Length: 230
Image 1: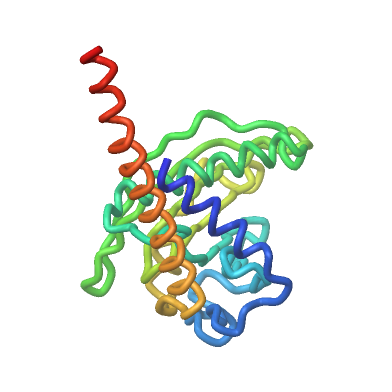
Image 2: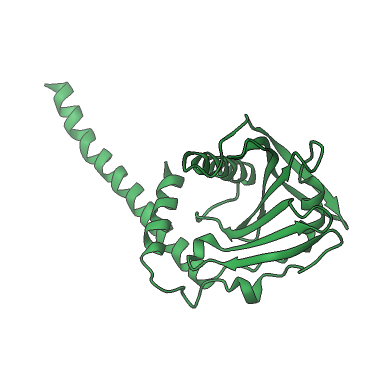
């Protein structure tokens, strides 16, 4: 409940801003990423006006141009994420809910049941640990796609990969190789002043709400004791 309250407060307050705050992360200047790697090239990128949405990079496979590899980098909507497993699993559930919502809106026809599992690898002595979900996605032309979602943590942010492979063009495939090639090349900016202030404010509010609940409980106890004595 506390985590949901924090996320809701973040979204409400952040949405009140008409302009992108100057103290928010400038991903176009601060996010480090390659325009091109051995097998992939950036074909589209967008920094969202809403700071909580971060930035999106769309890569395509040089040989199979209908393969989609989207990378989203965006801040964690909470003031605490020390439990990496809980944080990653919670975000993966939200990602799958986004896919289901896209199906409800008619962007896709349906999806199969997902398989969610830990996903980790080591490159150049650095270990990368995240969570992966795999499922089949059917579009409105009845074409099946082999689809994956991956999520990792970096600084105070999520790194989310969405990979989709057209079943007509390829055998059953996944985005493991794409993630292993691209993730180590990403340099994530540190926490922005904007997010630091937002998190501090929400932590203070949550703490105050908890204290108010304790006070209310303490005030009710004497009344309950009096009723039992009567």
